[in-house]
Amino acid sequence: MNIYYKSVLLLLLIISAASHSLYCQTPINDMNWQLDSIKSDEFNSDTLNTGLWHVLDCPSGDCCNWGGGEAYQKGNVTVSGGSLTLRTDGPGYAPVPCDRETFATGGIVSDSSNYSYGYYEIYAKLPGFYVNGVPCGEKFQPGYWMAYEVSDTSCISIHNEIDPVVQTSVQYKYADTILAGWSYQNGHCSDATVGSGTYYSSTPLFTSFHKYALEWNTNCIIFLVDDKPFFEGYNSPTMTMHPLKLYINSGLNDSSAHFNPATPFPQYMLIDYFHYYKLKLDCGTATTLLTNADLASYTYSVKSSITFGNSNDSISLNSGDVKYFRAVNSITINGTFTAPLGSEFGLLPSPCN
Picture (spheres, rainbow, N blue to C red):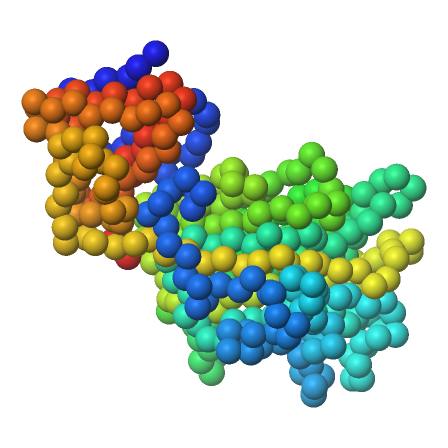
């Protein structure tokens, strides 16, 4: 079966033998994404890249219960064997002056607020264990999130936050659920949650590594697990935020939640890599593709406009081809364009951000 187009103006189209989100395509099949190697980390060294991250730490005790019943310690963060390890210790490990309900754990934060629009992905194994054959994640709040905040004398006046992985310990009780979302508050002394969605895994998230990802553009925020989107938001002005700091932390709930008495310590959150991609931008260029040779030599990036054919030419994909095209203003097909079954052909409206 072939699919043909003739003299058509297209703003959004995806043809595929599989089911995909209309807007979101991962860097696996969308060559418009480019890895930012400076802001990404494979964690292949034996030490943390201190030019990119610093360790959450409580040398003076001022972050006891920061975000919950946790005290972040430098010694609970290690890099070895090709992964970042965030360790959570059992009772008695929290430093003075933290109280008895506070436990030592690990986390890192980016060195500056310099993450903006793009595609974010970690490959991680979250904490948890089995109790009598039942998966358990009680009290744990593994996190992968970004934030920007400004305080004045009376309150937090600006707070922008995006959370690819965040949850309460109630949601993570069986280590199979994550919450994702974003909030936006700018110039007011109250926070406004704009959107959130929940992902439920058929297997406990501590049994294997999974991809946890985010696409963030001025016109969309999309959350994914293992390359499949589970929550999406589009065309909201609140998607235009400040550049954000990025956090990866093995968080815990406060004293209102307790560890299961059978919890084996220490517990670990393992991160194999963190990848940050940006769209390649060539937004001032209008491109015309007339032949299969033009298609084969095309340089992928966000264009001003893209035109296929001039009413006289025929362009065709091969079965198995995966090609996605992005433009700011328009994508037009003139003449005959063939996309056979087994190929993927996507036309995606994209902002120049």
